[in-house]
Image (tube, rainbow, N blue to C red):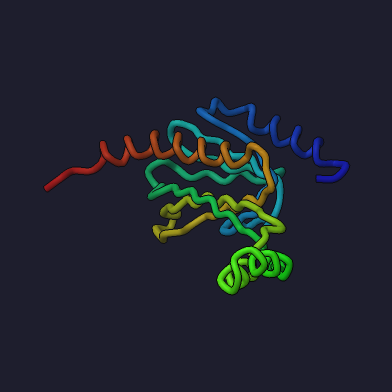
Length: 171
């Protein structure tokens, strides 16, 4: 995050403290759908009647009645490398003959690098009535942001699904 990362996080935390939220967290994340830089430190606030996304300057508010769905997915990306197995083929041939040589010499895959990507999507109706999607992508080798994004999605769906179910009328 650099030398000034903690100052930015403190400033963001101070902005977030003025709300009485059900849940909140901050993370360095990549986003698509907001008129701000693609990557940066964002704060996520979940209130009983809205979701607020905050950066250093802006506050983006999505009211409960405009939220259509909130989804969360995690993908694991692995870089694999083919591993030579000439030595295993020779040993297999010596022990079990031709069959052992064939089985032993089959190429093996070795995982050399793996990363996880978490994507949080918020589908909503904008103030002019058009349907929009916000996506937040977090790339990591580890850390607790994955669990924070998952908890945020679960709690938001718990609050907002109850609202949507209460508003729907079967005919």
